Image (cartoon, rainbow, N blue to C red; front, side, top):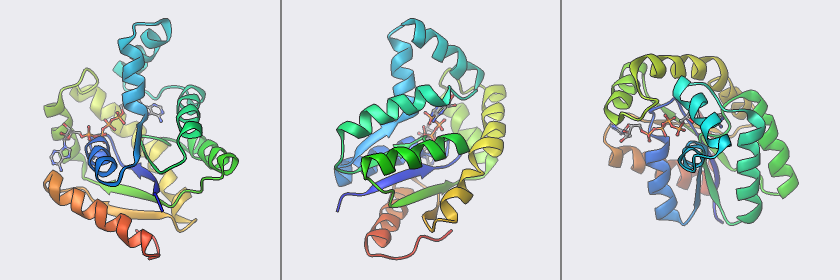
Length: 192
Ligand code: B4P
């Protein structure tokens, strides 16, 4: 059966890097809300200009806008998917539960990539996107701690949270991610 997976973790943990590899290896849809928002920015539409201002501040874009993006894509794609960067707060987590119940596509696992703060800051400063200045990165990490990290508990109480060590080479982390998904496919309980 094709996997239905949420990938969680702080900014710079490597969610996008790992999701690209996993999606290619397992034939899954990779749905990155960050990439979709940045694509909107490049259209230079009015909405794109509003989104750019939010991204450059390091804030989160509105829940309804992000949900609309995710709903449209998942409704068209029932085969198996990786959600990268969504949900990012408890409202989005509840919205996703409702959406998946409507679509009849239950979540199989939430993989939580774990990386300590100094490594995150170093990686993002090297990445150097327009939202990767030190001040903006620190703000995004604060928002992560306040709004996103608490949703780990949302998945943990449902027995769906599995932690993956995000330190090491991209290849080493990819092997851990793949092993974690294989364990879930074999019916092992998700643990963190
Ligand atoms: P995202 O696009 O999701 O990006 P991210 O969290 O900053 O990075 P990610 O964890 O994917 O790290 P990456 O693989 O790139 O979010 C950007 C913004 O979009 C948010 O701040 C927010 O404003 C908005 N947004 C997105 N989703 C939203 C939502 N649901 N609701 C509201 N707003 C939303 O890796 C980082 C760097 O590390 C790369 O340079 C990579 O090459 C490097 N790297 C990766 N793995 C490594 C490894 N093992 N070792 C060394 N370097 C590594």
